[in-house]
Image 1 (spheres, rainbow, N blue to C red):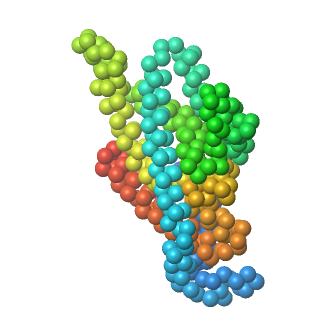
Image 2 (image 1 turned 45 degrees about the horizontal axis):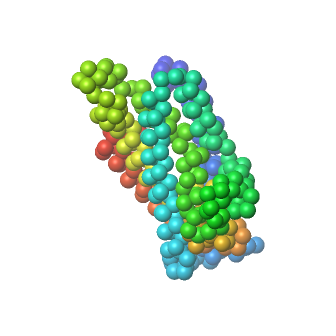
Image 3 (image 1 turned 90 degrees about the horizontal axis):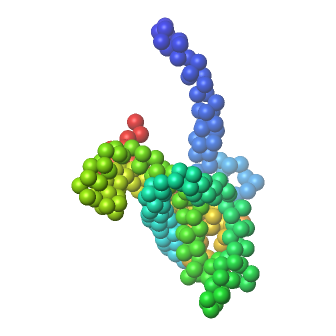
Length: 299
């Protein structure tokens, strides 16, 4: 028999059913499709009748001439996105914290936060126009100083740099708000005591503000390790071209071209599964580090 407490909580459990159903349909049922990575998929044949090939697709992926280059591009772009994406919001949050006029502070927060709500489809079109080597405003400004036009989206040397900077520009406003929220937890009495002791604003920032932000900095930095293989498919897909495959092609874009454009579904599934396994390991490590250094626990 159910207890009275369980009966009272029964409606709450029923409220979970729609969410659990969606998770089951979109997160667990697709697991069955992972078997494509271990079979030779033949269109028109019953799914369970496809010949078993074991780890052949994974071996082929590792032996592909561009596999190491794509993996290196993914790590390179994702690493700098994580590093710069952590550093810029900290600096901006510290600068905003020094503003004494609330209307100005709120205005700046709103302006830097707006790009976060725009999709890369919209921003991709805007950036193509802004960074155009012939008519883009960026190259027009550079040309006023005698600098030759730069092919930001068509040069292998400039493309990764452009990807990192534009991604940070889009997302740093959101992370800045997180750090500003962390600043509100610092006891104002610490600043008053430091001021009495003769500490200037720089020393107060160095010895009070940064140590007060350190737990959330460590937490976000460790949790971001789970994204070390997520270099941003939607961003790169909307900005790259065959001319920058050498430095801009990542695992996700290679999976897209292999699976949807070349119809090699088994091979694309193997690539995606490899990435998922590595990402799972990195997420597990990041949560372990978050618990070790920031005392953060999920359960």
